[in-house]
Image (tube, rainbow over all chains, first blue to last red; front, top):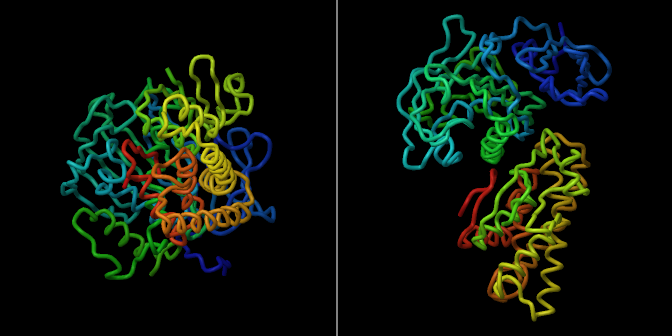
Length: 282
Length: 208
């Protein structure tokens, strides 16, 4: 019997993100936290060396520009084929520490209803607050939650946008604490930009949120792309930090959801199916 | 024309942007990426400001690199008697004290906010303790001020640049895990600042 310190098996055996590979220091390991434990992450050329604070090595892999590790015996990481498409620019939009649980951050990422009020003038407008009906399902193999046919009016959907547009959205949640958003590219009609939220679970109420961009935009300079994402994310930060309780309630009747919360309801149901107890209130 | 070299998430920079907005002054913004690129520490930026700090205000030949200097200049140059009480030595002294208080807030509440959000090294507990000590003093000062009919940090019918300099660090303090619920007079004062004509927000700050 492996001693997991009370961490549920699904969480224990998952790959978890522990930082953007490009942003690792070049002069020694970075000290950070994973699931309540101190760890070090060191650059090793194109790879990384991840260890517990006592020096015990942990599994490590580089995927989608980030370092991933696990405390247990992980299976394969979820697929994100867009990362390998030659015409995309892949970058870390921003990484910020936030005092909340991992699933609270995912739920906020899935929520379109807050756009007009929190991201006013960028991802929404107070004159267009409606969340139109959309489809949600847990995939047949039980490995992800998918929300599709989402439509939302956005005054400035991306750094490259030149005006407001009705933007179509699709979400995947292929990992309890990673969510992937596909939205219409303002530059290449018919294609979709991909924006992912990869949460590093430092503790049950302590995360580092990484926003990864895999986008079809050859022109916007890198600092401007990061600036756009930072501005948006920092608008979410006080909202996330003021959500109480910080852990996501999964027990029945904890909240009174409305139709716009369909994605969140499916997400919570999926976490219950996985047996996730970390960062939630069961 | 005023040029401001600044980072969107800088509380110090926000003090300057807020004051420029209250004055109705146009300016051009040059974004400098403090995090993660640390552009302010690069050679190009150090040529402008050897202290490698943000924000920097440039107007003609004048280059100013501290919030206290920038706000004082803008108040005296563009603010008129409303913002720069030139003949009132005691009030100018109080405003100077308020600007220095803002620097203490920057070094405590401001520093722990940046360290928590951007994973920078800092003794967070010490910074929070110092911030709470300052906030307790400010809350009492404002409470007694209200009782005497004063709405602002420095006595008088109008806000001063001391309010503008302190506001960003206090309104953003919760990002550094410093709950403002303990400071009711400060919360009323934050709302008064939010209702000033021309008030603007920054990411993480919401309007009245």
